[in-house]
Image 1 (tube, rainbow, N blue to C red):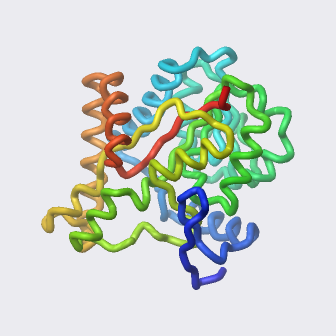
Image 2 (cartoon, rainbow, N blue to C red):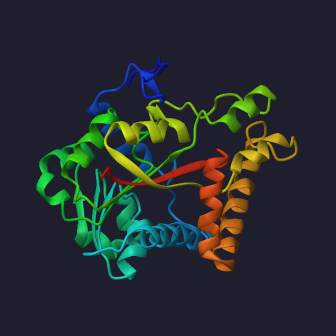
Length: 293
């Protein structure tokens, strides 16, 4: 795996790592780190609060879909399904789910009931080999996928060319190089620690994600951000970049607050997350888009 990288700005505004690793290098890297080891974004066990948080993330997506579209066939394609928590929420609501990833380790551990719907494949290979099948889905989910792939423009181009006209594409990415992160760097609260190759190859904020979607022939339906984790960096007593021991507490705060807000009123939480996206205030950015009419 290459160890020296630089950042370059794409014409559409997002940043990319150069040089990029090969597909074989990436496949080997993720197969080892994220699934066979207990590291990265995945864990072997989760608390009850965290499990509820995973459900809430799926419930927000469901509520968003029903706000802007009436699903006809209730079919979900979850590309990069990971441990399957997102698909589980839809499956419980009666949706037919298809899950794709290059390893079933996380899915086997946490949601083995969905293995019957699982296809083991590199995402780009699946998309290019199953073009006709893409047209049957109401929702295609790319949850923390776009920042990892070698060519995000090509991926979206292939999806758009084969999606049904009223299908929804859901994309969740880290909200990187946002104006709020720029403020944090200016104040000396952090550095550009979100630059993390070879795992993250591209970096998107609200403006660049919108530009990418529009360039590829999508119209934005909803743009949302989640809990603003990075606000903790302003206070020296909660700055988890300067004191890594504080990271778990910051994560737990996000989980408990999000669960609370969802229980109070899921629709108002959705409204809040859309407003937060307008303010570029939130750690994760989620876009819902469809083929432009």
